Length: 566
Image (tube, rainbow, N blue to C red):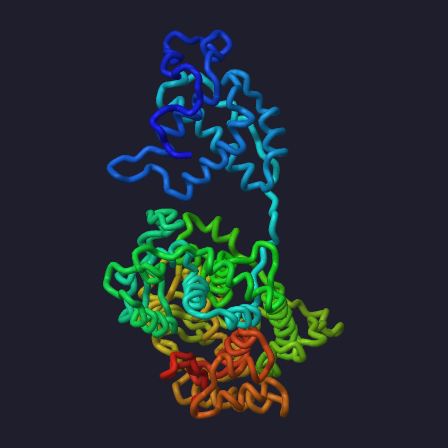
């Protein structure tokens, strides 16, 4: 409904029924409360708030304004327009909401609009402060989902996108790679793109041709393009008008940005052709996939939330889908950790030459926690650990070593025996010291900073675990650099020897030893594994044993290539 300058409900002007708060005792004592209807409050709310323009800018965004109009005139007013404001009862409103709404979100929207009308009336002193908002007592049932929370797998996504052509393909790729909302992508202008820096800047959104500010203040953000930078540059070059203020995805007349309806239809049709379609699948599914995958490859929920432009991490949690394959990978990692722990207890010497983890389905068959031998029960597990766990010392120069027997701490040195104690010490150190400690560990790749304190603790603790095993076998604690390199070469040889001929692990190691290396997609094609399984094996099965010998670099084609340095 458009603003006409008059209230659409032909009741007496609401100003005539204003209730001076100083003359009202309680609602029941005020007969004026029932002298005007909810429809009159709604008319004032719509005209003076929903449709109001101040300084040339609407108070309410176009998409929100359309939603308010729809709910108000199609649902709320047909039922409640003539109801006196003193006659509302929470039970009656709740029953109507449950019958009227097709989803939990619609029920929430209807309730919030009705509550907002009463709230604005009090804010504008149309209703007295002592008036109790009747909608505030309406408690909604537990949230439910109309559509299944689901995303396509990486393989399904690639197959679906293969059916699309530019411009639809590039728009979908931008939504998938950056996590931007479709309204933010179609709202881009050429000036919002920096090819040199490889990013786009979200400053506005496009809703059916109406340009407005992004959904939240945090939605104004910079998003990196990665390998899409070249595609975007070529697209800009192909535009009829590629001046700074022109639209990145214009309509045919080049004057307005395109609507998203054509992209949605094309994506839906592509999913149907690949038999990947499901209720609720659409452009927003690509955003949900980005948020999920970003965390699967190592991003934190806070990072995913900021990149997505969410107001809080709670919303990011709603978007995140824990896929079955990801659960399987994590479950197997936990089981492998338990299995290795049992092996160390039963046979500490064998732990040094244990083969690299195999995360392939075949390599995980029959995985179970090894049992302690019954003849070991007369010896306490805690006693075993006390005799084998070394004490680590961090000196004033930020070097870590294993303490010798009866060694006393020098001035400025601190000691720890567990990861928890290391974390307690690290909580008192500046982040710069953690970087200096890491860079002082022989053989590691020097860094400038850690993403967060927990990552620093995890990496430092993991890097010194080999020292503990050496100490248990009588190897000197000082660890000169040559001895360290000899140990790594031995470990590397063990990794290669334990790759069974013809196995997928052996195939991966063979490809990694090629001078040109191999891409992630090359490893996926060779093994038949999904992307996250390949990354898991590279991280836990290869990098943990080979350390800096496993390197990655980006080739001229923009793809990341992995290889093992000789």
